[in-house]
Length: 306
Image 1 (tube, rainbow, N blue to C red):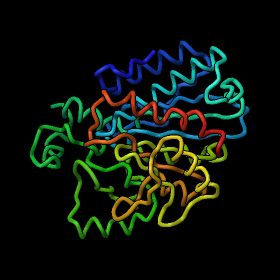
Image 2: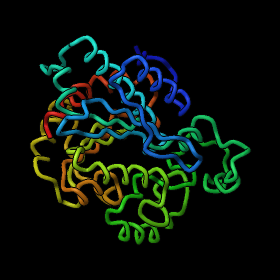
Image 3: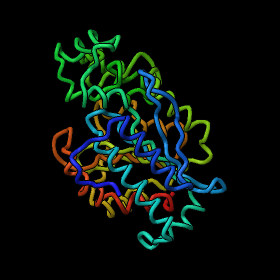
Image 4: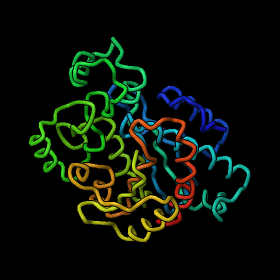
């Protein structure tokens, strides 16, 4: 069982080893990869649920390297849900074996493995972008506050949702490639977002709702530029009661180019951004247990709400 108090963040290597171990332990966990990062790291996904399930949801975390505590939350959920199914246990009144038959849950625990490596380990001298990345990082070799991907693009501004409007804001604010906020040359210009968006498009009929996990602020966002998908208000209020998180609406630069914006715009289906925990990013890993406790009911029950 994952020790939530373990003072150790997930690197890509440790995450891959953990997910491989879980998929070997529980035959009903399907480990796959939606694509590769800029530096060639496979982006893992765990699918839980019977192939015959008519509905499904998707959970995505760690767009931003400084929010890697969310990977911890996803792994904890995968492991706990698998144990419940294996032992025939209920969760919040839900028979998890029945849920496994009726709903598929796809979990992408770490969309940005390159950025996580930079933040936790620095930029390796063999990295061909090293000099450029140090320049993007204001000349510093300390990448502990890096959020972007492997070449200085903020993945959660790289989706095709009001992208051209955001580019104007970038110009007005002199934003260039760096640790955060720069959206890239074009929508889905980055390996990571392109892989995820392509996967969702191909499997759109099986993905009826989406949760994307960030930090921090204990807020839930479910509208995009005032637009919301059917059932979203009802679900958002339920999630707010479960978590104690406030319902909010993105403003300013935060309201452009995100996964939730794109999913609502593209498919008109419920999508929610959860800003988990409180504090200053990156949140200390010791907070993971308390954050998971507040999210646990949402993670188990969201598939039956959509």
